[in-house]
View 1 (spheres, rainbow, N blue to C red):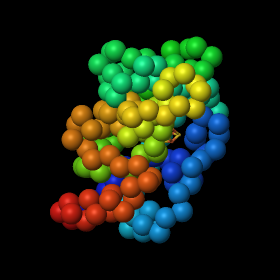
View 2 (cartoon, protein in one colour):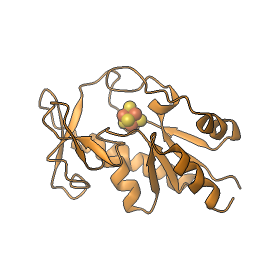
View 3 (tube, helix red, strand yellow):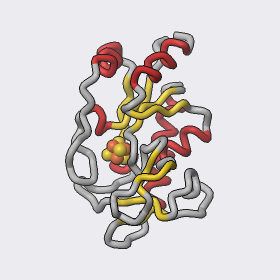
View 4 (cartoon, rainbow, N blue to C red):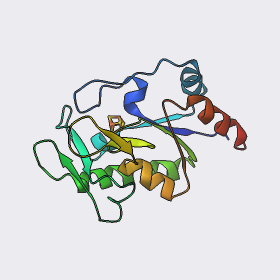
Amino acid sequence: NLKKVLMSACLLGKKVRYDGGSLSVNDRLIERWVSEGRVVSVCPEVEAGMSIPRQPAEIFKGSGNGVLDGEDDVVEKRGGIVTDDFISGASIALELCNKFNIEIAILAEFSPSCGSSFIYDGSFSGNRIPGMGVTAALLRRHGIKVFSQYEIANAHKAIHAASE
Ligand code: SF4
């Protein structure tokens, strides 16, 4: 019963980012997870029905899991409010974790969905602040360990510490 992991699709080279690009991480551990059949890929924003490309979005007043508590909003650069889409994408990611018994996720840092330690501050000026994207926050709230692409070695340890 192989432990599966959830991964941001953009980290696997899929061109799903707001600008139509990917964030491919060339890491042999990720290649190994893929070849072992552990990886379940998700782009919460695309799963929620958002287009590629799409407007860049940031969490306004990004205060960790404030979006889930109804305190903050996810806003597009041109001003549209897309909070509901982001929450719906996060729910789809959580459903995948439940379906595949996933306890570990590797998500793309700085994203308003996937960021797990840092996000942009909501001013669209490139400032990063400590905080979590909507999907990372929801998964953590449900006990899933979330790592970023900068923590691959730690994620690998966590995978192998979990019972196979
Ligand atoms: Fe999709 Fe997350 Fe990558 Fe953004 S960071 S493109 S939401 S997988």
